[in-house]
Image 1: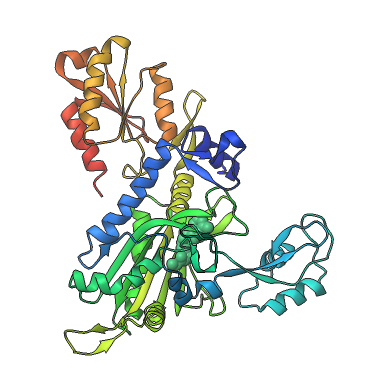
Image 2 (image 1 turned 90 degrees about the vertical axis):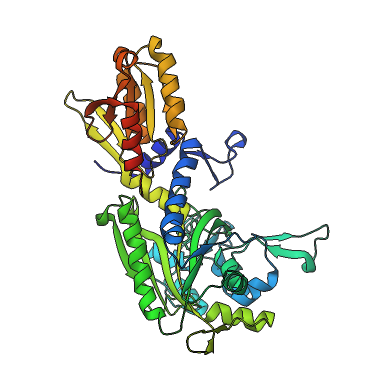
Length: 457
Ligand code: GAP
């Protein structure tokens, strides 16, 4: 069974996980709304991250910084100057293109522009007479650097003084708050500050459904450590991130590490590894783990005049900590887990069932309560209510029991609980397992214990 891009996207839309944004107005390109199952899947991903990266790690804490930050933050971080894409306009049809992507598409990926200067890209495009992908003419303007930060104004005046930016990464919140957290919580190195929140980038080439959008959520952690120990923490966090994905059912055949070449490294990074996933169109970045050295804290110290030094209580040395950063997008993980979970199975009777094999921790609905007949509705509703105190539970009484099982398979509900005549007599129900379709009889209390056990993470 081939998991095509079209199949995955249409399943996400048809089952109500994801909708086109502003759909009744014809949509707004590359914006997506998440329906109730989508929200639940996202929440489960975020909670699983929080659990392993923050809650269970005695070193790490979590913050929520403001999305709108003093513009000096972006001056210090280098985003005002360096966070840009090389753009060319086609003079003939007035479309806008990224120079590196023109070259990569023209050479079918044989030439990548890692580390190329603006002039090198312009020359390559001129010498090879690369045509505009939209109109076929070769008539481009010179490259202009286009900043990816969204600009807006604070207050009533729309002038340079009131210009502010929507944050393009959550990371700077952790750098700016480093001293406050360290002092107030008496943290000793090494320790991490994590954050989950929205980031915004005016991407030139958004697309591939929710893979690259202009508004997305990041889960980032800045792990502050003594200079020199970053060489140990970098491989530690690389492995930790991969293990986290695998423990939630990620298929190892679709995952790999890719180290950045020196030319490719971001301006702040000493070493970066991406965890890549084999998306339906090919390998793509899922998670970036970077050794950001003392770059950001030094920049903020220099720009703000506030010391970012740490006084080591063991050695009495003063230094600016180094930082290892695992940074991932919630929607990318969503797409990855959604694609991995998708399956089509041919049953003995020849029917095909679409089933989402989500890890129970991630499954948006943990169990569905299904009264076999209308007359079982009252007791079934009681069971639904009892279970809903602990879990996200669905209730469905419409259509044949077979159809109801299929609907739950399609959204990846791991347990279906059928209520029948016997329930009224002895309080037992039938539990049906999504993956094996096997059924067992047990009490509601045993069902509760089983679900709790399966979603323990
Ligand atoms: N603080 C470092 C940082 O932001 P990044 O590689 O630019 O690094 C980290 O972003 C992660 O955020 C990516 O690996 C990806 O999962 C997610 N991400 C970045 N840009 C995105 C976009 N336009 N749409 C969706 N997710 C994005």
